[in-house]
Length: 306
Length: 306
Image (tube, rainbow over all chains, first blue to last red; front, side, top):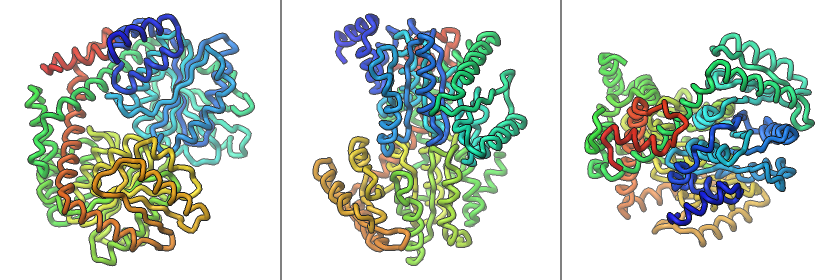
């Protein structure tokens, strides 16, 4: 982007033009967002951010659509980020998901964005962090980050949200896997969706058992049952989100999470830049060599002592 | 690992004990593999490595099981790496996949490993690179890296293999998505699996059309039809792999790919180390600050000029 283009973009962004928000996020995704973020970060810091994660088919997008509807009835301006690390083969699904949000397409106070970034130095989680920051700076008060279950990225993306909701469905046998995969530790709220399923009670029992044997801090993760497709349990979920938000403020954990999020973002950006710098320092002549040793040498040639 | 432990591990590895290979891979996964790799990398460089990627349900593991069987009839020692970036919610599926390889569980010349790493500095792709190198060094001659379609990681993992197979199934509507997602560019061989499906012809036509409008080098990606579950088309797929292997040697591209793979690995390791170093340099006091600027400052404090 030219310098003039960036100035115009920032002006339009400050003037509240949704197109400018969209373009700013695109700039970040393609690794050209540094200046835009530098100009706009000071406007951010007011939004409530909620992450929703869970296995495919659990109803994450129905849940986020229901939360969006609830937030709108309360007059909040809402941003939705759909993160799909497995994008190449599931764009179709994403498109289907967005159809569930179709009722909000013409609402100027709802902004929906899918992320499937490749160019961002900090990877997908870095691009999502930028998008969250920009939506916040744009004045969205409630931001939902919805991500398909995806190992490392999902845990990283959950770290970007103030409140992480882990959604599960009865009869799927996911709960034991969750425990092993460290997903229980990231959940602030568990949602048992499709709560009319005959095995819903069993899943609730399993979650309660997991909570008893897992480690958590002062906040004991809440357990909410929903049937998102009928809007049932959404008020209860909203209340749980508000209780968690209040807890974060009172306990001082909100500031702590902001610092961690910031550190995470900085680390990702720095690592991305180093990756580019190191590129020119790799001795590919020794391509059959020891990669760990070559990495040490490349870093040493940049003046970095380990 | 203690220094003594590492020495013993390396001795057992050189003696051909499969447990030592398993432990060496685990050491790499958890970020403690530098010394092991340094001692063993010189033994690697002889294996044929094949990556298989494609959407969930296409039959990747049935395909790799069929390739393993074929390789065994030719007397090759075979390693299989199952990469699943979406692990937290799909361990069950992975387990199911491994059952397809069950006939080889007692065969000492087949080594199967699932990867779902968190600790590795270079991420999942870095851990997979290490595992490939170690299997190669251990004497496995044919290594299959099987990965569920997963955006960036999948492209990265494909880069680690000499030959990349993209598997598709008829009637799924995946082909257009593939073109958009840059998957066509990474395919050396397309496999249309479930080739008895009524829409198999249409998928083949779509792939041929895509190939006509996409860019490829001197190697024109081959198109093989299989019914992996019945072992049909596997001989043809094997022949295509051998033709591609011969092409790589004759064209000099093999050396080129090795250099790129090496550079990729070094870059990942270096970036991971920097991530750790930068951690201590982030000024979290300014947690509401500009993350791009903070990254520049952290790098500057390490003496790195951008």
